[in-house]
Image (cartoon, rainbow, N blue to C red; front, top):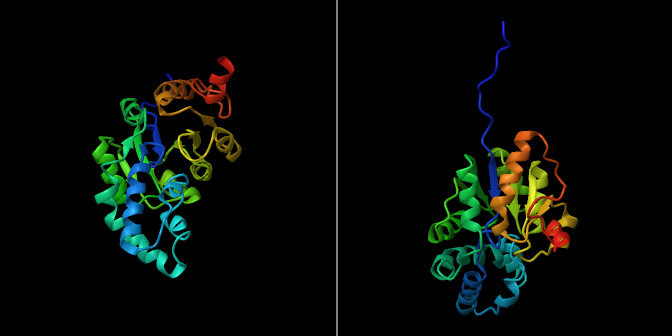
Length: 235
């Protein structure tokens, strides 16, 4: 008798994406929201400085400008006024829509896992026409691993060393883009497996990654097509 062959298809690939400065250039909107908060509270916030260090939870930034006993209250107010000031000025980063669509076109699932307040993250995505399968908010760094593991993400894409830490805590491949506050050297030092120049390189990288996984020849840490260092070596 011939051996039985399982016809169970392999699980669909799930790829996670960070939001701010990975998919969305939210700096103009966040700057506007901080200026509005300054006008309302009378507390001067250096909005131009604040938008250079996006990634960590809002409360960490507010603690630079407000006494600790006001941070929670002001954070709630910021999130309340955010839609009026921050959604329209923010733009999709190059390759963002195409990267999410590439995952889905391959039969996979694209999820967004972000430190941002989830309703505001969803407003950004809807405004920009980016349509992930799932959005999870209010998770930062290693805490992102909770959502990545829950959804079975094999890859997590982000711009911050905190995103790298989240991917590693989840046992996911860390794909990084130096489009936010962290440069390539910082991302690699944090343990990123792959660094792409930006998300325009992601769909091609994804095709290569999926093919190598199917062949059983993918090895994390080996330079990939589109990897920023590999591209520099070829230049």
